[in-house]
Length: 400
Image 1 (tube, rainbow, N blue to C red):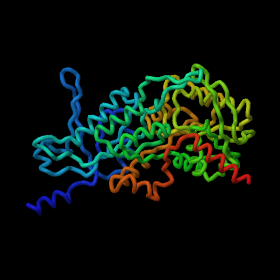
Image 2: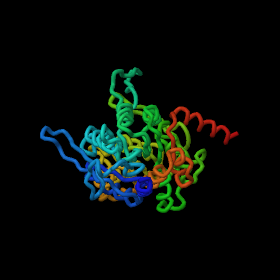
Image 3: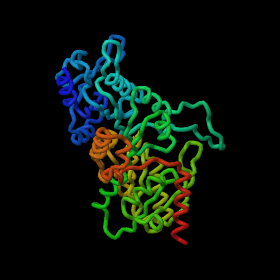
Image 4: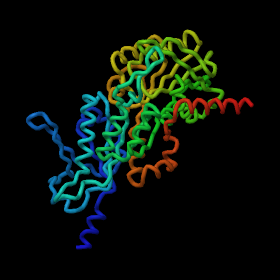
């Protein structure tokens, strides 16, 4: 009997991929990229609805029966690698959140008579989470709202309660949003697309350009500094930091340069999200009309692309307000709504996500943080004021 149990233990997979059909339906392109980088087996997910519309889900091995007897006291895999999104691009935020927690429950649930779960451990791979609502909203009079629901905090607590204790996330929106997940007990591996964008640009940019890496505000400075480092440029000499003030409607009223020079520069802007693209368009127009920038390349990790983003982007490129838009395929809108537009280029992130998932699944988040292959792709979000003060100290040391 001991020999039989050892045989089952040895046959158990280190990890298995588990994908909810909702996500595959909306973004099979990126999931195929991730699949290509993972050599583990896949657990099949079956979904339907009860007569009253309540979702039903079952996970089972490919070709298996999905019965208690099939497990026979032995988990199927050590780790379930679960790609997930929480975004209205997958039907609705509510649908993608419920799909995620239902799937997590299915592979970790045990009960009397069946003490064995399908897996011992859940590893979430999150190309994008809609966690921009991360604090009380500011009001034009300098006050702040109270009593708002903070979605970043809600999602963190719900995922932690559903068994997700480790997560790989790509370019989270802010340090505050990120902190909700760590406070909920989820160990995070924060990736950034900065190195991927830099590698892509180095192959395609025009020689002799006078590049300036532009941080749209202090909140994007950390990301921009990481990108500058990946490009191999001196941030003290080739970084520009902007400051924006917004009106009652949230649109940009004023734009000023708080560090650096833009005159005649070939500008590269690296942002985490493009939503309607209204703000980025207004910023780029000011940079060309008022600051004399020669060209502008916009990089964005997440293509939220709410209406009328696509129409705006076509106009910006057509009128020369933006010269190039390079966006990752972290969300399906970037792949399907932009691919036919001249001047738009898409960088794939699935290989990076798969490599990180394999590294964590075979060891831990802590070990992945020390992995040399991932080191250039890691960026732990910091409070924007701390980043700004550290950058000012760097400027002072350089000038001294």
